[in-house]
Image (tube, rainbow, N blue to C red; front, side):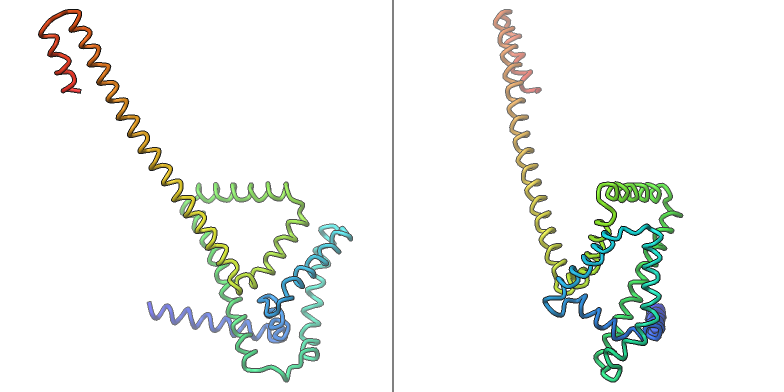
Length: 251
């Protein structure tokens, strides 16, 4: 077990070191983006929303086709991949790289590697589910994709993309400042409160049902006794007079 943990740790360290080497030219940009995404200043969240809104308003105004949009996006990535390693040291200054920045850059790369591992792990679990429980896999996939298709049909695709991108960019800051955990805790408390109220109502309903059932039994026995008394009165038989008592005792 310990050997497996050590092997996993060494593999994680090797993958992190490899990623650091690949992204070395993006170090300053990644540190700046990390500060913005973690909301180190109060005006970063509205700045993120403003930039994203401006980009999507431009896309809405230009209304490009799917092929044009994909081509422009890939072209932007190619330009960034070529220009950022060249311009970043001149803009930020490579001589200002400190030990603290290097440690933070290492943490960012480590988090990226862990995120990639989680994604690969979920992908493998999906295929494991397909092999072990194919019916559950296909039902889950069909229901999930049908729900996504329904949401996409109800909401405009550009608006839906805008909401998803905005949420993903705000997610690190929400997590950093504990906003997500706060509202998740509030939701859990409300759900527990509703469950307790439902349980109390069920207990009250069960108690009421027990009372009604008891009254019904008493009334039923009383009716049976009255019927037997009436029969005994009509027949005027001493033997018949004892039958209601026997009937009540046996009920």
